[in-house]
Length: 87
Image (cartoon, rainbow, N blue to C red; front, side, top):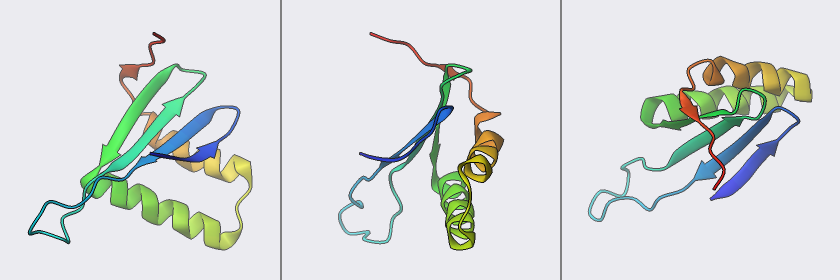
């Protein structure tokens, strides 16, 4: 687990899971995105995680502002349904 991004509104954490034995190219893991203001989170894996990663990489190549990153992340948190619960 690696925290990749932490702004006033969002936290993005990457989860890396080793590939399945015998299938070294099997994608696993994903990204958890927490919307601090809405107090909801979403976990992206598979194709959605790949799409998210590609979009972030494209933004990084442009030298984005925190506002641009937050705007991009907001596209994914619009689908968030899981409430954030403190233990």
